[in-house]
Length: 266
Image (cartoon, rainbow, N blue to C red; front, side, top):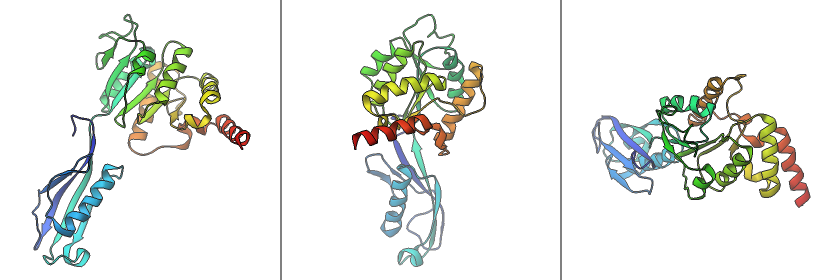
């Protein structure tokens, strides 16, 4: 499951006291497709654990499930069990579209916080092993690459190419896919003008999954500082600490644009 990048959930019996159907160390894995491997004892306790596994696979945090088998579940064995339930997820992939200064500074940081990093840029003088030693590289035009790409919840997309028009093309292609995260690097003015054009073609609702401008508000100026602010945002989102201001659609100007479009449609 880890190698495939799919999300699953694992249950481990960490304590068993009295009469129980399994001992400490027993495990059960719930795959992404709903099938299982292993057992924590069958019966009502296993059904209870399966429900917890499904919630964990779908986004709930890791936790310990404590059950008195007789009192809580009506099982005749009557012992006590504690089961640790945790999500299992392959290493997330961070796709850096553009090989400029910010992405060059971000790549080793992202690798250090657990991302598999891939840089997509056709410029051989910039997309080099020396500049991106910790990343995989795709020497191809980002827009062309995205035309044939498929993404899932393992994938995170960050856009910072060398050309505003190319940023716009790449973003439109990315919005048609289903990565977990889409981020656009740029100043507030640049980002708003670009998104204004996309909203006019696709509707502002198309931007609801977009994070822009990316990075936490730490007054970053230099590429390395901007990279730190972006990495902090990625960590926050992975850990479930999303703040309202992160998304592009939460910009008051885009919110007004959305409201105006809805009124016109009505």
